[in-house]
Every structure is written in structure tokens, then in C-alpha cells.
Length: 277
Image 1 (cartoon, rainbow, N blue to C red):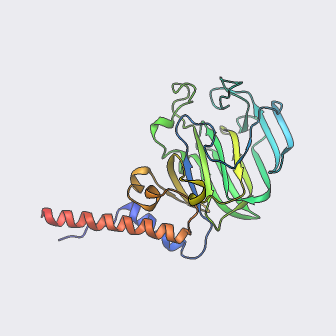
Image 2: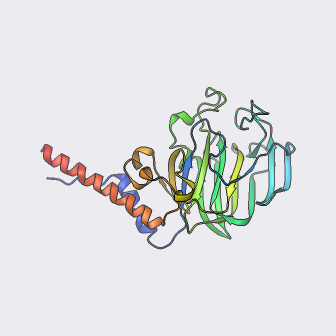
Image 3: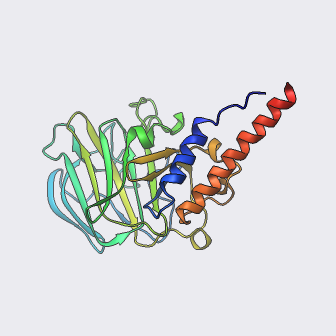
């Protein structure tokens, strides 16, 4: 009887467990439901760009939260600008690249935070989102590592899915575990396209599922630095994340449990294949 190899998912999980056996910064990401352009979480501060002038803005203050070094603000179009009650066809949004003078925007926080969320619209391969604690990279995300795994229901502008239907639009929540925080968030684009986003949302405290409830939406990825483990609802079915989806948990405990479930699945498959021989 030939023992089948572990799946690529199993190997990736086990590798990540080994890599994070020592304390490491871990960010878990969840996407809100496809039509959502705001976070459903409570106890947060929200920044929209509706009151800023279009074009370049510098040293923009987010009262009680932090400061943006520079922003390029654009009126709503097919690529960005979440709808609001007063602007049902879309509002002003932040843009990096796309022929503007602003290729990067840095949000420096007054207090290190363990949660951030924003509406990432018209995601493309040249968008890069980075979280730093001091000079240390905590986690880095691109459309390929974060947005691409989302179901087709996220493709296209939610105002009309036929508009720009080849690119994903999603409100993404970023949760640091109990040992993970960041004090600087950088959005960059190399000018080849545009990085469109809106409705920035933050809170200082790490998310506690026992207090704040389960995390909403679709689990997407677990990231440590530039190392990404993509996940999906199917991958997590029957695991701790699906039974009680929430953060923070000690990263090793979370990963170890996830890894054990994947290994158990592989053994179950082995038993079924043996019985069929």
C-alpha cells in the first residue's frame, strides 16, 4: 500500500507552524460580505475622504488616530469611491499611482493598533499594503496574496458588478493576534496602475472573540511578514476557525490546531483509500 503524500495545504500549514514556533507577528484577514464597503465591527474609528479636496493633500490628520504624510484624493468612478447615503453613486477615495504625484501614502498611528480595515476596490497586482511596528515589517499584502482567493462574488464594482468585472472589490479586516500590533501602515503602487481604497477603520485593542463576538465574512489569509498562508471557508470547515472564528489566539496554538486538523484529514483519506483497495 502506497501512502499518499500530504496535500500542498498540509505542507504549507506545517511549514508555517515550524516557522512560527518562536513568537512571531501574525495577522489574520477576513473579508466582509461582497456588497459591504464598511466594517461591521464595533468600537472602531472610521476615516472617509469626503471632506478632503480632490488632488494632493499633505499632513492630513485623523483626529485621535494618526497622520497621513500625503494623500491623493479622487472623485468616485468605476475603480473607487464607496457609496454613502449622501453619495449613492460613490464618494471621494484615496489613490496611489495611476499617473498621480503620489506613489505611496503612510499612515503613522498615535498609538500602536491591532486592527485595521478598509474597502480595497479594483484590486490589481501592483497594489501593496504594508504594516510596520517601528522599522519591523509585521505583514505585507498584495492583491495576489489577499484578494485573488476571494470568490467570484467579489469581482466588479458592487454598484454594478458589470463595471470592471475582472477586478475584486472587498472590505478587508486585518486582525493582529494578542502579541501583534503596528504603528505604521503604508500603501504603495509603482505607477503601473492605481491603488484605490476608502473607509479606513481602526481600533487599538486586539480583537477578543469572547467579548467582541465572531469575526464576520470570509477568512482569507494568515500572514507573518511576507509569508502568506491562504485559506478559504472550505479549508477551515470543521476547524477552530470555523467553529469559533475569532482572533486573537496565540499564533502557535491556532496554527497547531489547524495543522492537526489537516493531518487528521490526510489520515482519514488514507484509511478510505486503504479500504477501497
